[in-house]
Each structure stands twice: as C-alpha cells, then as structure tokens.
Length: 87
Figure 1 (cartoon, rainbow, N blue to C red):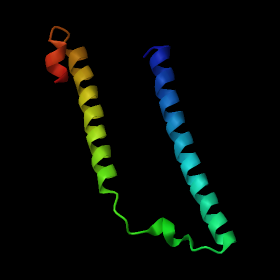
Figure 2 (figure 1 turned 180 degrees about the vertical axis):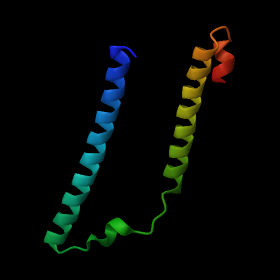
Figure 3 (figure 1 turned 180 degrees about the horizontal axis):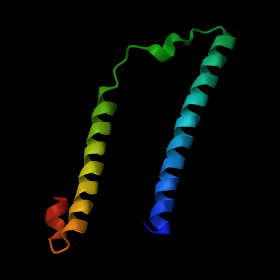
C-alpha cells in the first residue's frame, strides 16, 4: 500500500473513534444533567422504534458494500466494462 491509502485508512478509523467517543461522553453528560435537575433519566430507554433509520442504514451499508465489491472486481478484471460492474 502506498502512503495515501494508509493515511486514508488511518483517518477513517480515527474519525470513527472520535465520533463514538463524542457520542458516549455527550450522552453521559446529558444523563448527569438530567439527574442533577431532578428529571427522570429513563427517557433514554424509551420503547420508541426507529425502524426507518434502521432501514436507511441497511440500505446505505448495502450500497457501500456493493461499491466496494465493484471496485474489487474492476481491479481483478481490468478489461471489463465498468458501468456493467457497478450496476
């Protein structure tokens, strides 16, 4: 791998870790603020279903996996038609 590929993988993982860290620390701070204010912190454990977000996430993951497989196929067989592979 060249330097650019290594740098892109490293930056992807670092950004993912920073987002996860920020999400969990902010969530904890919100709960602590609710407890200090005397409110019920169980609102984070609500029974609401986020089905549409789940569907959008699965579709986005499917598109990403399809793109990655398309790139892999094109790299393995360079004489193929690119538009057919990505469809």
